[in-house]
Image (cartoon, rainbow, N blue to C red; front, side):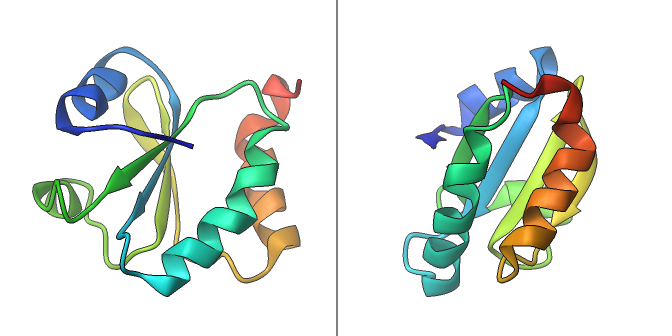
Length: 105
């Protein structure tokens, strides 16, 4: 997953759709969640980005992020799905597929 900074995130939200994975590099749960998401993202023709929430703490307030890890799906710059649970890969795939099925590779 490509890690993006504040300016890149702002641009993505203004101009496109995609999934943004909010995490902290010190969060063990975030590391596990990223390993669950990584293979699934290869199924869809949608960009997935990673944001270090420690570098952009205001983003947690803006997007009302309750905890990390958090994955938010944006369509045309608007958040349409927010996920916090990644311990059940079939559930994660089901949630992503519901949003991205029309973009299967």
